[in-house]
Image (cartoon, rainbow, N blue to C red; front, top):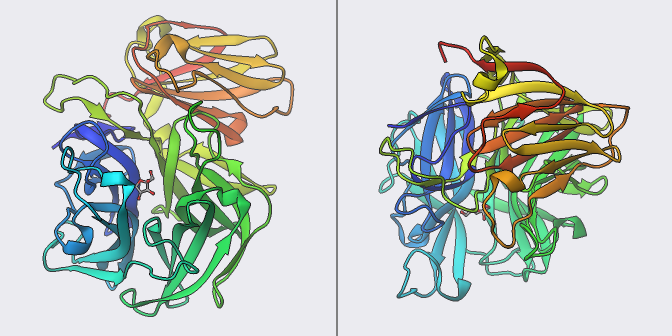
Length: 446
Ligand code: FRU
């Protein structure tokens, strides 16, 4: 089975959202949306990887696959919970309404229905797709509650002996909303409440709600944030919220903010790490499959971001690389021009107004108090994908950058995690110039 260091990558073919992210029985488990037959989206399975430290991942056998009438066309995104020593996995179960004769892995005329389902695993290793699945929330038949097609991505948590589920939904694909269900045992669920906001745009995907530093934080991926056709229309965002477990009443306290100012980060999911930190990973969307590495993996499309610690400071979220990421690197022993050929590597730099860095063909500059990035030299010429991005206006004279460079991904943590800019890249060049302060490569033993 495939092993990945630092970033989890598709084990060949296609992956998208992280699912069922949990620390369970001494291991991190990360499931993911997986199409096992080609490097494109299709009938979803849950792939599975495990790790002791969030940075060394070992892919496992497919965990969940379509096997029931209600999930025959896809095991969509969802989450994990530990209960009485067992691993409960919750997912959205998709059934197409007509068969697409030319491609059975995508719906005909985009028509399908979605219900919510679960599987209980005794050990997080074996998943009985035939005997242990159950449908827990049937296809919704009341539009006032939620959409029969577009209601998905259950994120489940426990609070004071009860279980809660948030789902993304929409009213007629025009108004995004979040639905809440409640349960005493994690098995039978009742509808509790809903919340809608123009901030959720046309549809809300992959909501995630948790308490952090005395506040509730909502993460979600609204569809239709930016105009379709210019770039991806859907983006991962965060907002501070109020939430009452007794009524499941949610209210955003203000507008949503981008979680990442690059163009590719989407559908993140959070969990609590071994030491109690809130940590998340997101899917890095790739417009083209990466080439077959030649080791049998084959062409692959989709990877996960670094595990990022989420912290609330002065009313806003900061995203920083998990300490286990830091621990993987040490100061480069090689001259820097050689070290940049050994990816992944990490560098630190401070940019002052007008200064720029060229990291393997990816350009970063401080222009008009914003960090401006340009990947045009390391990205295929594809219409519909932007190559330039910029942060909001930064405070202070210079900006501090902590940059992680892997073959297909550059992640830039700006000013101690105040902003993150991540981009998928192709064909990095072996060069480095600009005001670099420190360069790090992987420790030998990694
Ligand atoms: C987000 C998403 C989810 C859905 C899954 C399907 O990328 O559209 O809402 O469950 O992907 O693969």
